[in-house]
Length: 99
Image 1 (cartoon, helix red, strand yellow):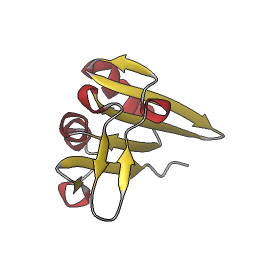
Image 2 (spheres, one colour):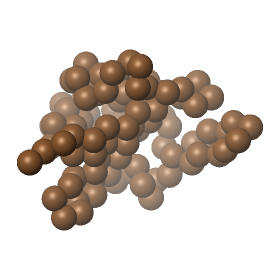
Image 3 (cartoon, one colour):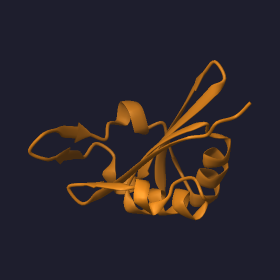
Image 4 (cartoon, one colour):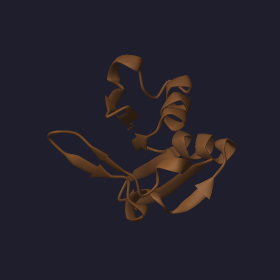
């Protein structure tokens, strides 16, 4: 299961999605603190089938967590070399160029 929130701005659909267990977690490093906030990621809880549909329509994706990043990778939306790890939590972003 995942938490997901969808933002539509003009011609873009931003999908913010995280693994279920990461919502409201803080990731800390020496340089920064990132909160995987309910405000940005916590629209509704969804299953993998729904996640795939939303990733398909997304023009921008912001993803946190091993499972959701792997899902996007399997769909060809992100490549392994573009996935980062922040204090052990996988993170990826993508942008689809559409006409």
